[in-house]
Amino acid sequence: MTGSLRADTQEGVTAAGEALTLSGSSVLHGTPVVPGVGYGPVIRPGKRPDVPVDTTVVDEAERGTELERFRSSAANVSARLRARAELATGAASEVLSANAAMAQDRGWIGAAEKLIGKGALATSATVAATEQFIAMFTKLGGLMAERVTDLRDIRDRVIAEILGIPEPGVPTPETPSVLFADDLAPADTAGLDSRLVLALATSLGGPTSHTAIIARQLGIPCVVAVTGLDDVAEGAPALVNGITGDIVLEPDAALAKASVDSARAELDRVSHWSGPGVTADGHRVDIFANVQDGAGARAARKTAADGIGLFRTELCFLDRDSEPTVDEQAEIYGQVLDAFAGHKVVVRTLDAGSDKPLRFANHPDEANPALGIRGIRIAEQDRGILYRQLDGIAAAAAATNSKPWVMAPMIATAAEAAAFAADVRERGLTPGVMIEVPAAALLAEHILEHVEFLSIGTNDLAQYTMAADRMSSQLASLTDPWQPAVITLVAHTAKAGMAVGKPVGVCGEAAADPLLACVLVGLGVTSLSAASAAVAHVGAKLSTVTLEQCRRAAAAPS
Ligand code: PEP
Ligand code: MG
Image 1 (cartoon, rainbow, N blue to C red):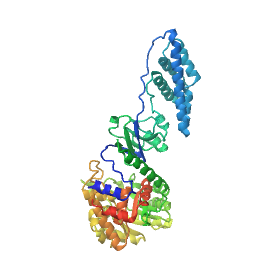
Image 2: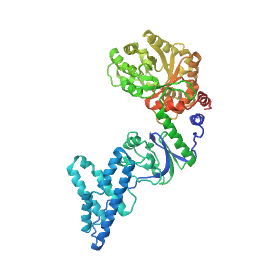
Image 3: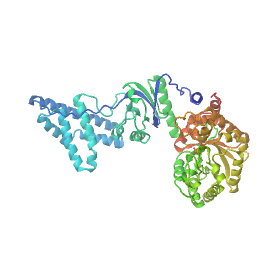
Image 4: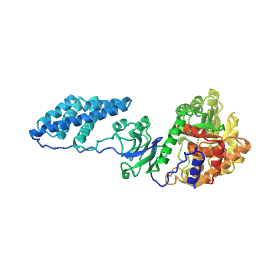
C-alpha cells in the first residue's frame, strides 16, 4: 500500500533517530499553515466573563474593600500586560504596552473610583466607567474608536481578576505549552510569546486567516481547521505538526521531543539551502520551479531553483476571448525567459481543455473532457494554434538570447511525439514531451527515439492510471502519487531515459514532496520541478541523503 512505501522511505532516508513512529496515540488532522513542530501541554484561552449588570448599593462600611478590590485588580492586570510587552517585540510589544497603560489610566480609574464611592460594586463600576470611555472614544472616531476593543478587553480582564476567575484571552503559561482555540483575535495572537506558546491549533480558520498570518510572522507552528479539537482536555500533552497537519495526543514523550528536534533541524536546513540540487554524496539533480507567468518566474528567481521545469503557458490566457498574437505571446514568454536568463527553462505548449478550458481554443462539448480533446489533441484539430505558439516561443528565445526547451502535454503515442518534435526542431528549439498518459509511459523508449527529454506529469499520470478524477477529494487516496502503480510507470519511464542517456524529470506535485522526491531520484529521475514554495524543502532534503539511500528507498516493496 502507499502508506508502507512512504513509511519505509521515511525510515530509509532519515538520519538515525529521526524516523518516528507515533502510532498508538490518537491523531487529529487539520490544515498545516506554518511549518514546524511543537510539543507541550494544551492550554486554552480563558472564556470572557459575563459583563455583570448589578445595581446593588454597597454599604458605606464596605466601600473601602470594594475600592481596594478594584485598584489591586486593575494594577495586577496592568502589570501582567506590561510583563508580556517586555517579552514581545515590535508592534506586538507596542500594543501590549499601550494596553498596560490603559489599565492604569487616571481618568478611567478615577471614574470607577467615583462610582464605587457612591456605592457601586467594583465589577459594576468597572463596567460603567468603561462605558463612559467607550462613548467618548467612539465620539472622537478614527484611531481612538479603534481602541474600543482594547478597552473592552481590559474591562473583561479586570472583572475576571475581581471575580477571581481565569484571565480571559490567551493565558501566559508557566511552562511552554501548545495553544488550542476555536480561533484567535489578532490581538490575542500578536501577544503570543513563541518561547511559551510552542504551537497553535484552531478549529476554525484557513491558510489566510489572521491567526495563520500572525503565527507565520511569529514563527509559531500552526495547524488550522482541525476536527475534534474541542474534546481535548486542557493540560493533556499534544504534538502539533505544522508540516503534516497532524496533532498527536498523548504521544510518547521521547519520540515527541525527537520529532520537535528533527523538525527544527529540517527547517534550519531548509532556510540555509542555497542550491544547487545535489545529494549528500554529490549526485546532481536539478531542482526547478513550476511557474505560470513572468511574476511567478521573478518570485521563483528568489529561491535557489536551478531553472524552470514547467512553464504552464495556458494559465496566461484563461481570461482571453481571442487568441493572443505571436507578438503578444513572445512578450509574455520573454518575461519568464528573462527572469531565468542563463538557466534552463522548459516551456509547455498550451494544455487547454478539461479543468483549464481556453475560450479561443474552440473546445467541443464533450461528455468526458478529461478524456477528450485537451493538450496536444487541440493541435490535432487546429495545427495553427500550435504553430503560432511555437513561433511566439522562438521569437521570445531570440529576443532574450536563450535556448528554452519546449514540451507538449498529454502525448499518448510515439507518432504524436514525432510530429511535435519536428515542428519544434523546425524553429531551432529543443523538443520534449510530458508523460501523463499511461500509454506514453509504457512506450517511453519509443517516444524517446523522437525527443530529447521527458517530463513526467504525475498529477495526470495518477489520474489516468488509477481512473480517478484528480479533482475529486473523495478519491484523493487513489490519485496519491505514492500509489505503487504510478511509481511503477515513473520507474519504467526513468529507466527508458537512463538507457539512452536522455533526461527524465518530474514536474507534477510528486516532486514537491521531499520524501517522494528521494524515491524519484532513486528511480533515476534527473530533475524535480515543484512550486517555488517547495523548492528549498526538496533541495534541503535531497542534500541529506545519498544516491544509494534513494535507490534503496525506491527499491523498497510497495
Ligand atoms: C501534471 O499533470 O502532473 C502536470 C504537471 O500538469 P498539470 O498539473 O498542469 O496538468
Ligand atoms: Mg497534466
